[in-house]
Length: 418
RNA sequence: GUGAGUGUAGCUCAACGGUUAGAGCACUGGACUGUGGCUCCAGGUGUUGGGGGUUCAAGUCCCCUCACUCACCCCA
Image (cartoon, rainbow, N blue to C red):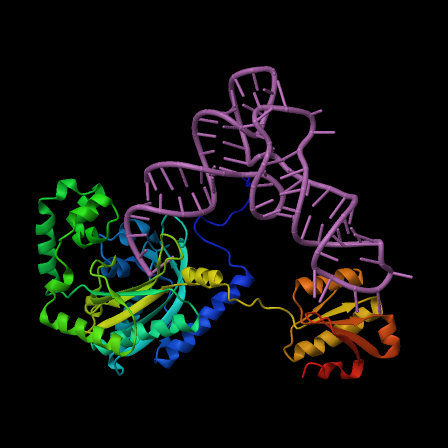
């Protein structure tokens, strides 16, 4: 169908139609309400940043940085990158503007498009939207628990069910090297039997071998050391405190010792919310601690934690749950004839001044087709105006769903819906 | 980056290599001269994604290309 002359949207981006935007707004509003109750306030950071900001924070050897970023030189030759995630820009803002001088922890949320040059598939786009939150300035496990319970409340408010919460701790800069060594040790004599991907992982990020899906690798890793066994005392205490608090708040979760993160800056707590309804891209939200990132950016030691929600995936879950009411007009005015059309316009304008959604039929069309259109739009009421109504001073109303109808004076119609 | 699948009307899809490529939905009108949803009737649209090849004949087979989809990878 597409010929060379046609204009198409770029691969992996999408147009979002009004009916879907309605769902997006519901999600955004829910997030704002829930997050506000926990003291999180919106911060709007730029969509473009210096490339370094992402390279330094996400990690040079991660896939995101190595092959997925939209990076280009600006007119002055500076390397610019469209943000592939929201944490780094926010931390940059936090450090640059010395927000650490304000009372801690500082709690923010943000929402907007992210960009990654990936092969699109179900639930994965090149321009995709996230709502994220970040809390900076406290290492208290209460904060971890609060954030996870906030996420639970968010999904509850949307009426979504069947979500699984998984948590893990991947240790800190003190204990993780020990674990990494243990892992390298464990796999060193098996390396030749690992899949090609895992051979690479062995070199640059052995933790990722743990969530490889190749059968052979799954077999090979049985009995591999678990991160949790290698946590230092501080990390262990932190993790246990978090688990206790989650139980206290009645949050059901699974510990997933194989859950590792794709971004280098994570420390200690990591968590993920997954679903079985979406295919391969099953993470709906994910996050964790990044206690060293603020320092990386030149700020004072500032432990922090955050998460991001994948908008498109939540939208799809909501569509699947099929609980969405579609917005529809309150009133449809069917007009027959030129003078009726003028009358309809005047009445519609008055309703609209009160914020009532009114549609007007095209008087050129038959009453039948106007009625049909009112039905298609799912209007609550139809008002019928023709020459008869104008001469009698009364117009006809009809309630579409129960088929009741009656008459009302033109002078009173304005109060009809009060 | 790798692999598989699919491209036919606005949408969802038919058409053993063989006349003029069809149907449903949707849209408009009519049956019902001013009352929607159900029913019936009527009405229009296609460079069969694009290019090349095989053949008497290609939507159908072959090659190239483009697009989309799903999966790997990766992640939210």
